[in-house]
Image 1: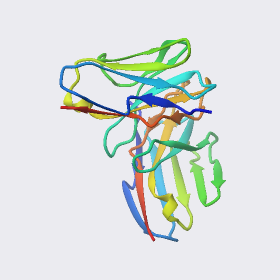
Image 2 (image 1 turned 30 degrees about the vertical axis):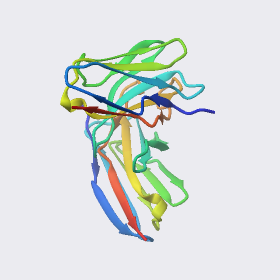
Image 3 (image 1 turned 180 degrees about the vertical axis):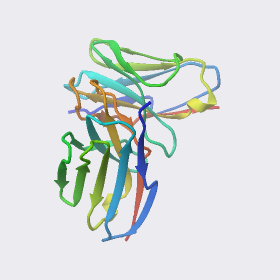
Image 4 (image 1 turned 135 degrees about the vertical axis):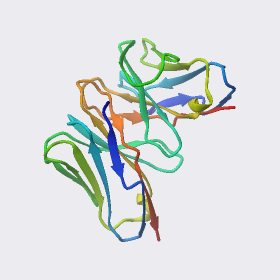
Length: 111
Length: 113
């Protein structure tokens, strides 16, 4: 079956440092979504990537979709304490709205 | 504009019992998906409902069943509870259509003793 792998599992950074999480799928994806889950909270939608090689930016966050549509990354520039949480990618490969979530990367930012 | 609401927030059951969890989707949304999130893991897709029918299903046994009502709200039922069913159960709603953003509720924390 389809698998979405995400690395690293944990990342501890000093405030101001950059952060990147990577997502890899065993199959070609139709699109990929990214979510953020704060401790004790629920996943919150950040962005969706659809096109091969697509790059989208949201302030300090940069999202990329690989050329083969099998991998994606989220990069945060100059992390802040408000960035703390777990970041999940969720990939879809069929014609329905069924998404497979990665195991997430838990980001901790030390002030 | 209310977001996705789930009830109850917490539930404690014993092995072998049955449980029903409820979800009201965000206004304007007609598709409801249910996920199971174990501690430290990503959400695992259980199934999705649209037009009162199960449209997609993940790798979960038949003990997991659901329902969607004409007002788009949904229920998740789990029979013959096992210790391994302890998890956070998340409901996500979206508009119909491929690749729509999903809006999650706060979840129901289910503990099996």
